[in-house]
Image (cartoon, rainbow, N blue to C red; front, side, top):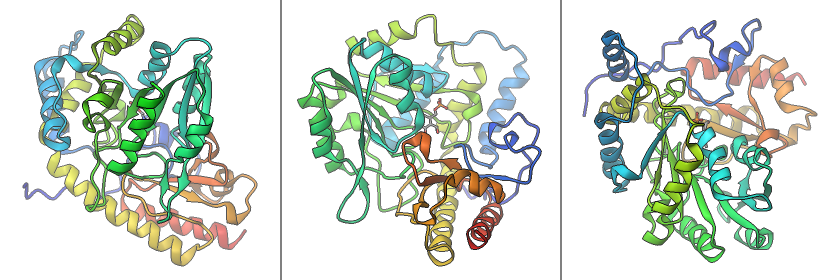
Length: 385
Ligand SMILES: Cc1ncc(COP(=O)(O)O)c(C=O)c1O
């Protein structure tokens, strides 16, 4: 294990860098704690790899070369016990286009797509963009007050025309890492109804609860693997979303070919920096990732404890992964919760696009001092409402 101490405390100035997160509030004193990128510099091992690529000075068309392919294959094997072949991989400039293209590739007009809500908004818009019907089934709470799938409701909602189920695992925004039992029941559901499963596992390396492990859906058994499209990326974990590098793993040759046909001529190649960042992240990023998880664990505890003692009206359930806290603010009885907090200097994600009215999502992937400031502003807002 490395002895380098990485710095997560320094507050970077991200204004006027074209940052989606920061430039939304460029002319106001609003602390952006919304969209899912973190206010941490990337691991120095990654910036060094990018610098090396930059120094080469030639930025031609790039194909998936040995370095990143090998890095992904080895990482999946070592970290997730998922053994894949190079040929199952497809590099992509983002998972949002991949989700949309999956809907086009695996459904036709008149088909429907199921997902469990609340969920990452592009899951909800993709079927509509493709002119397909969307079946939303709300997650429910289990006996331990954790979010889980409502299998009974899913059974009742499924239609003969349902072809696709889109899963977010670990889950954005509720932060759950699903257990083997939950995933197995979900896999059985897909088998029984002959569904193709889009398993978006972009948050799989952000499990900060040491008592919990992520299970790659396709490793459950060979039969679910044959109907699963696994979507992953180094972008969330290593804070590289601007490098636009993601990938799909599709074991089933027929599904792979349908997916490849759908992306032909539409999806651009990943750029040379995306590949370089991806390779460095998976080959050299582990010590940084471990320290990031330790930092996020403390930030999560800070949010949890602060809300419990200072703003008990906000309900925040235990989470296992991600740096995105799903806050139930319905008890505050606010007409527009995101706007309310924005007016009091904190930019949170509105719950509505996630199909979660009465909720906001807070991004705690930032230096602790900034998080404390955001929480203090939230308290002040609630106290003076
Ligand atoms: C579940 C999920 N999928 C995909 C993405 C974004 O993927 P990309 O930036 O590769 O389009 C996010 C970003 O927050 C996400 O939470």
